[in-house]
Length: 248
Image 1 (cartoon, rainbow, N blue to C red):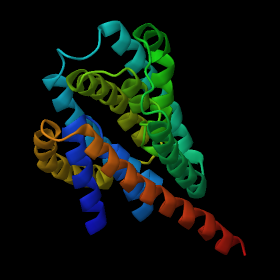
Image 2 (image 1 turned 90 degrees about the vertical axis):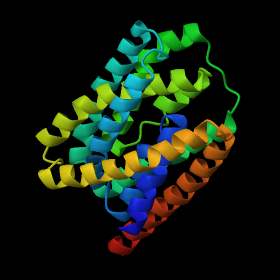
Image 3 (image 1 turned 30 degrees about the vertical axis):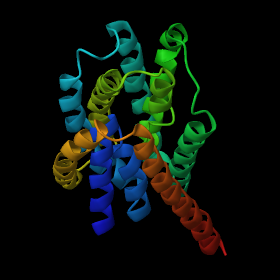
């Protein structure tokens, strides 16, 4: 339980600093401690409500409406499909998807740090990127390999990035919550845990916001990538060797 609290607090710090971090950090950690379905169900409340605040605060700096409609609309479609898979796939497959999604995100960030996506190209790809991000969010709780990598490649100012990704998360999560409820993965108990997690996020976001204005983004990237790498390796190890032991 202590590790879960620390993961959510760290996610809140990252969220305040760079506009994303709660699901990126907390979903793999909660998957490691519990399972993928529990991680996704707990995080929908903090994901929705923390992003409402940031979406409103940075609404003037977000990208134009046409981009947002395609990007967020794609996320809404993708998360519905991803949630359906979350409800039918075995736990081992879901855990592997989480670990591989995290490693893909790390690989993209490390291998192509200077990759720049032209605005015209990004506009054309916004719908597809939204669908991919929504699918990953629904199935694994982590949209970052698609959504955050896509926006990072556009080299947006901090305020524009936060406003855009927050609107994406709000609209996507608004679909994810009823989808989870309809397939029986979201209960009143999970909602209660979610509101507890929200309190931790709101507690740590101001610190992240303060640090984000003073510290280099590279510091946050390094901490986040190292943390995620360790978690992903642990999930892979436990899933692969656990399956081998059970199959022996």
